[in-house]
Image (cartoon, rainbow, N blue to C red; front, side):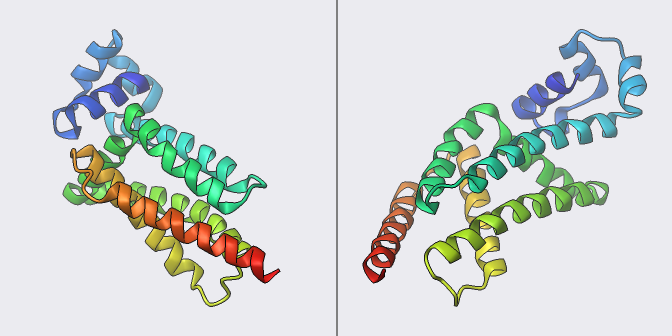
Length: 186
């Protein structure tokens, strides 16, 4: 049922999601949602938490690896296409939309954002150490990175790619210059 709910949410959006559509998609009985999840809302919460768990685990593994930050950044940018194909940005966009329209979803949205912010903070702290960026406010830089990634993915879900490649190339070039400068200073 989680897979069915995810497919429907990605394909049709939260406004068209219903218990009936989920059980039809899953080929299951209506009572199984209440039996396994307690409610339609709890099923959606479980589906979103599962998707976020997958992303967070992958990001923790990526940013926790003993590799130069620039390599981690390159890999993170490569995940954009993987995430788009899997539908994760659409799930996040739908969760955001649900939170805009129903305050009951805001705590789940806030938890998801906080968990992602925590993962990115570790990456930013490591990058600041690696590049000797003592003057960087880690929390602000982390928020900027999260908003950058979220913004790009939200735009991509909507078919907008204007400037994304050039911005990513500029960031990549800046990281390369910073890395070269650090090695030259040593």
